[in-house]
Length: 262
Image (cartoon, rainbow, N blue to C red; front, side):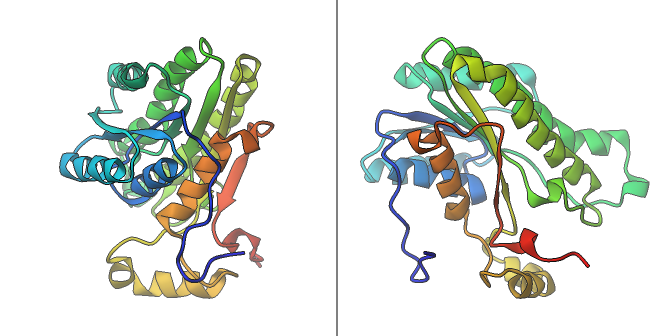
């Protein structure tokens, strides 16, 4: 049952787990990190530019009684991805889960888009997923396995105007998860994706009132998502409760994808 009072549901016990969440300094990434900490995991908070927000999140997690570490890396650079994973795994001597959340979502008409514009989305949204997953899998396969979750989007199969590069990138992320699940499964590594719908953020209703209104009308649940909704899905997929789930795209959109398109 959805908790309309805003309280968070109980979570699986992930005590002893160490999770790396990329792009964790704000928005969805922060919600994911907070929910992993609430489940008992130790959390590596990755950031690229949000150093202050990352430190505040580490302090918040620390006050809750869990361990957290902030690490900076530019995930558009392959070597930075591998360094980040190595430092995350070295912090507590293990890495049991990776959530590939970092990414960008600019808007631009396809007709005027340059290859550089396209790559400005593909590098952080797709190529970083490839590099971080490859690095994490090398660690996990030598230590009994683990879980990798990519944050995709319902736009992976529902295109939106001025989002061509983003939609294509998220479609690639979903297929990468399925391909990685196939190849890493024999080593005890599960790979899935989570595809959120519209997630609330401060100021969104002011910036895009018409879009928020349309979403609320279209969603059977009648509300926007919360970052913690995505976090709960990621915690579930990283937990023993999902031990036989891999290569799956878990849609977290309040039911919008169930709406007829004609």
